[in-house]
Image 1 (cartoon, rainbow, N blue to C red):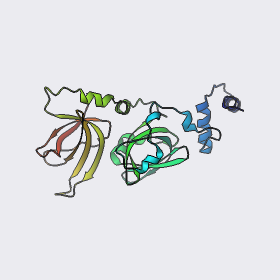
Image 2: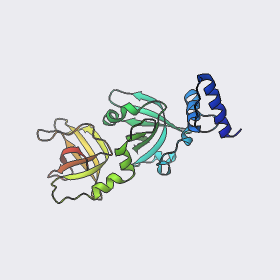
Image 3: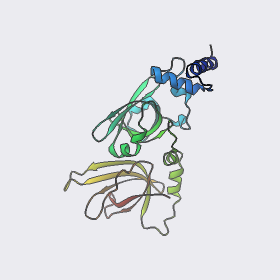
Image 4: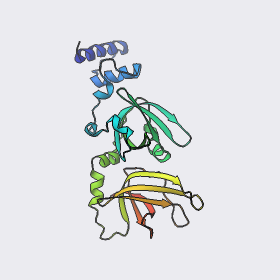
Length: 243
């Protein structure tokens, strides 16, 4: 029996029990099998769901390397909530991948961390661990324009083409954003930004003080404006903007 015949038989069976007359697709049937069994006996559900980023996904074997950006597709199978962060577990065929989600990323994307949802996750690897920057949830109706503009190169192009003639600030596309507490001084809360600025990759640090308050919940994919301080490694007045 081929897959088309299986889908027809499964559809007839579902319609018999529900009293409905619904035309189920192959993806619908595989999704229901996966939900009931946690696997699809005839074809992997994840393979039946094609995204525009399938050709640029990071090979699973490469996740052991330290990479500034990785792209992973999978089904969320578990969410382990911690005090100020989460660890999600996704399945990509036979591979189970654990991904850390820090507080700022969790704040923005926590509602999309749902078991059974298909997601594409951008992140980075460090010390054999994967850290999430953002996600696209293909099981929701949201458009994820910011995330897709990042992955499609649209945001980077906007930043590169920005006219600085009447600007005194710097505009960057956030690659990574990491909040931490400084070990110097009074232990101020700081933000490390890795940004794309006018064709260049830069790293800046911004810390809370009497003259500078860092914004909360800055994540990758956002476009931010800031001023570079006298020390070129630091910046002030970070804020999210739209260009």
